[in-house]
Structures are given as C-alpha cells and as structure tokens.
Image 1 (cartoon, one colour):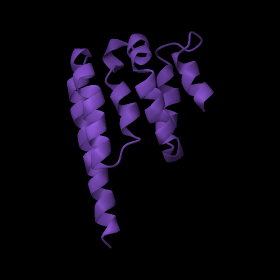
Image 2 (image 1 turned 30 degrees about the vertical axis):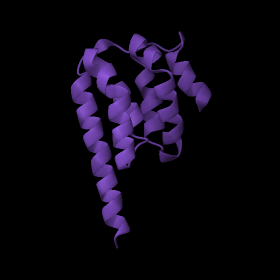
Image 3 (image 1 turned 120 degrees about the vertical axis):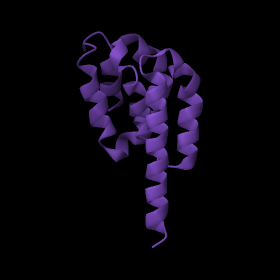
Length: 113
C-alpha cells in the first residue's frame, strides 16, 4: 500500500485521479496509521499536486487515522497554521478536528457499557 500511496503523488497519476487512492486508504481502518504517516510526511507534495479547490481534503486524509482527543490535538497542531493559506483550509481543519473529537466521544461512550 505504501507504493500505491507514493504512486498517487508521482507523475503517472493525474491530480484529478489521485483522490481515489487516498479515499480508498481512508476507508480501511487498518490503513489509517499508514495514511496518517504518509500525509504528514508528504504534506508539501500533496499541496503542490492537489488542485487548489481540493487542498482541504489533505486534512481529511490524515484525520481518518485519529479518533482520540490527542489525535484531534495533533491534527490541529500540524495543520492549523499550514492550512491557513489553502483554499478552504481553515474550515477543513475545523471540520476534521470536530470529526475526530466526535469519533473519540463515540468510542468513549461505547466503552462505558
């Protein structure tokens, strides 16, 4: 899967097609840690390749790996300042952080029973 993730940032995949690779990885919980590490490690390459109207999705790809209060904090810390210059970036960060907090709250609620 690492190879597929890297392929998405290469020259053989068009920017409009790369989302399919990352949305596929985002849909598989087993791949979430790998996706988080990849997005964080290749953030600049993502932003450079993704069309400006989709740049906020870069935050989403990383957020699926986080479902804890600490994950929400890490997401905010990494993307907060970086996303200020992206189209829709601040909103994407806010929505992603909220989604992670809601995920963590659901997990905590189910663990109480």
